[in-house]
Length: 257
Image (cartoon, rainbow, N blue to C red; front, top):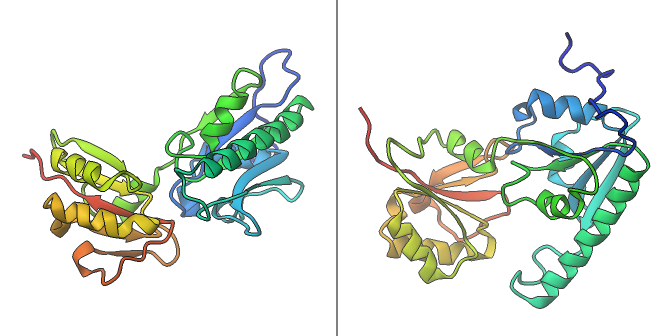
């Protein structure tokens, strides 16, 4: 059987007349890290939706470039704001809430017509992903399937060739948006850590790592598994610039034979 057979049709429940929303995890960025199931559903989908910054093609769309059928209908979902407004501001919540409601309505109209939609999600769909905001709005109204993906953090510690947890190590995943004092407390209390959502918070995270005594062991990864991948010790990074696709790793050193 050809696993990437373009004639593949996703199974439907008996009597199902509406389309299925497929949340497709794309992995950390390397197109070769998509699962077989993800590729099959992307190739078979009559409609492929993806998130993107306004006026941009978007990273998710770029990842699947070689897998899309020529006949596919594309549905870009363009964020009204990204970093222009602080996430804690009421305007940010209002803008994004309205955006997700509109996106859910657009997807719902396609699903109600009987067509399936593959909604692309970088990394894993249920891990800090925009897919989740549409999932909670559409699940129960339409059939939803979810294809897990390799997380960005997994791709980054693989790029760094750094085991992240040993034996009984506890791993803590922290968003860099947390208050500095909270970051220090959590970093002190864990064996291993991943710090995401760096951006303009990088200098704060760096201070928190130093205050927790974990800065010397931290590893900075930028665009892990993608073109332009950069891996270095945090101590060797000369500035506090951190693009969207960047992450900090603090490996554990626990029990081992």
